[in-house]
Length: 397
Image 1: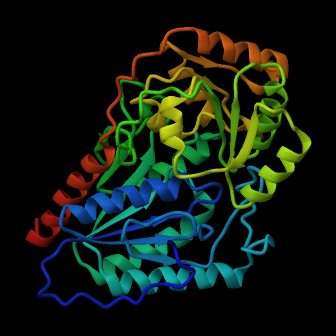
Image 2 (image 1 turned 135 degrees about the vertical axis):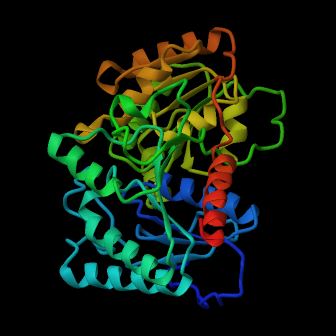
C-alpha cells in the first residue's frame, strides 16, 4: 500500500555499486500514471537496481506497490479537468506554502537517494504547472550525483499541446533530457503525430505498452455478462448511469464496476436507483481482468489501461472515449483502436439506453475477436533501457 508518510531513506555510500533510479510522478486525476510508473519501477528493481518512486498525487491505499519504496509528497489533485487549478487534499486551492512543502520534500528525497537516472513521468510534455517543482528536483539530483541522466516517461498518447507556445516551452525543457520513453506501440500510434520532437532533441524509444503481469488463464466458461468498468473521471458516472438504464433493455446480466475514491458510496447509490434483476453494481475489484476475459462484451472508456487489458483477450468491446473538458487523448486512442475487428467506438452523446443495449447485443452475438497485435512488454523494455543508462553513468561514460 502507498503510505501517507515517506519511508526512511539512507544515503547510499559511494562504495555501493548498485544502480539507483528515481521516478517522479503526480497523478492528478485517477491512478493510471502512478500504476504505470510503479509497474516500471518494479521491473527496474527486478533487473538489479535500487529504485525510489516519489509520488505527488493523492495517496491511493488500494494500490499495491510491489515492494517499491514510495515517498509521498503533500498531495495535489484536480476536480473535473481543470488542471490549471490544482487542489490540496482537502479540495482547497493549493497555496504557496503547500507548493514549498512539496518542493522541499522532493529535493530532500533526491539529495538523499542520489540517483544515477531520474525519470520524470509526463513532464515536460505535460504537468506544466509543476515545472518549477520538476526543475528543483532535477537540480538537486544533479548536485547529489554528477553525471546524472534524465529520461522523460510518457504514455502512448500524451495530451496534445493546445498552443504553439506550450509546444515551444516543452521542447525547451526537453533539451536537457537524455532520452524519451514512449510507452506505446508505434504500429498503433506515433507520438510524433501530435508531438513532433525536433531531430536534434533527445532520442525517442518506443517501449511497448506497460501492462500488468498476465493473470493465470481464465476458465473457459464465459459468464455471458456485460462488464462495464470506468475509472474516476468525469465521464465515468454518466456512462455507468447509461449502462444501468440499458440493463433493463437486455436479457443478459450486466455488471457495473465503479472506480475512484468514492467507489463504494457511488456504487450503492447507483444500485439504489436501478433495481433490475439482471444488474449488479459494485466497486472495482481485483478480479476485473478475469471477468473481462470471460465477459460477453466489455464497455469501457478509452484510457491507457483499456488497451493493456483488452489487447491479449478475445472479448468484444464497446469503447466510449472521455472527451470532457476538451481533452483529446482518449478520442485519439479510440480512433486508432476502432479499425480492429470486434471493437466499436461510440461517443456517449450518440447513445441512449436502448441504443447501448442494442450495440452490446450485436457485439455479443458476433464472433470473438482476435487479440490486438501490440507489444505489451513495455515495463521490461523500459527497465532494460533505464538500467543500461544507469550503468553508463556508473562507468563514467
